[in-house]
Length: 555
Image 1 (tube, rainbow, N blue to C red):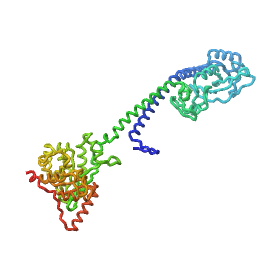
Image 2: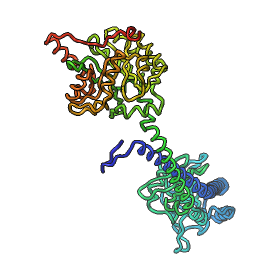
Image 3: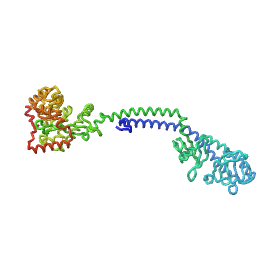
Image 4: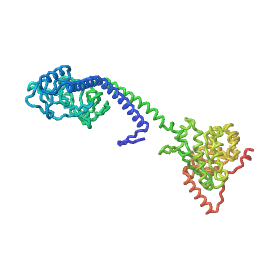
């Protein structure tokens, strides 16, 4: 269980189910976003392809024209040169004007204005590149003056003797192509801005440089402004980068139907995943699903409850009881046994308890003749597993002189159980008929079982009040015990009056909270030591009577 700040308890299965549901929701929504990104990519691909074709054509055609001029036309401002240059511009729609460079790289004449009154000294080129041995200068976004008033912006490309002005109409075609930006990679690193669509926003400037890579980029970017989808394409054969930046708001608006479907699918998937995971997690984390893993010796806690002589109060035995550790919880048998029965794990339960008990009992010193009472499920007795477990884990106690009594519930008494009991008695173990008086066994079946002890059920003991014995079964049980040569152990004794009445009726032994609650092994060992010290101080010999000859009693 987990606890929130408000104090509410949230179960582990719920936490796991919520996590699975959120993960499923996020995964499907992410897939939806990837799908929308693919839709945007398919929409932008034709724009980039057209822009790339235009840029490739402009670059190739401009270089072709300049190289032809350098190769075939003598630089100068005479009429023959200008005519040849004008014919060259008419052969293409890419170059709008050619100019002749003079001293200091100043433009001295153009195909449009002829010889200039004064040489024109342009600004230094933005980029200088080398193509096939030719040194080429590029100047971007340069203002052209037409008729002294109309201004156009274009790109100027320069070689050794000539300059070429890219047609403003071609630049406009790129501007209106749908691209967000067109940039050129600098030879030394970085890039230079060539054009930016009029519909762009200032926040795009943060995203555009992030997405400039030699191999291109497609994906989501986050700058100082909105989240955006970016497609950045390296134009083949050039150093130009074409880019499209679409804000998330535009993506949502354009793909609202697809995103709505993805969101609905995410909610549905997340909900179904939560329900399924919650069901599986509850099965996994419920006690019933964990019981098999818990039934291991390391999870078993063995306790011992004293059995005393009613005439002297001396501790002469104990009953072995168990608890099961489940994480930080310690579970009593009533909380464990029903689940064990439902899961049909009685054999594993008894195996874990006997292994742990045997290991713990071997660590303490019990006096000779001391009695240890243990319980088995009926199936463990019938299958012969009980005999195997006792031989494996309790045989050392027999060698030390400890008496081990197997408790059999009266309702379990039948021919098959009697046969198994005889096998246990042959191995040196004793038998105690537990909860006697609550079943329907008769004197013959009890005699055939030949128990060493009859245990009076606690329900009869609790009916005792003062000097009265409302139930006449206790005297009868004691009489039956005498007839089958068994001794009587009364369970559930909670006060001195009950102990006195049972002693007067002839019961030899008692067990209950009046003498001691179930206690851990170290505490029980201290109790034994205290009784031993008292006995030695009073010079009293222990009168332990758990030693009847089983063969003589059955004869």
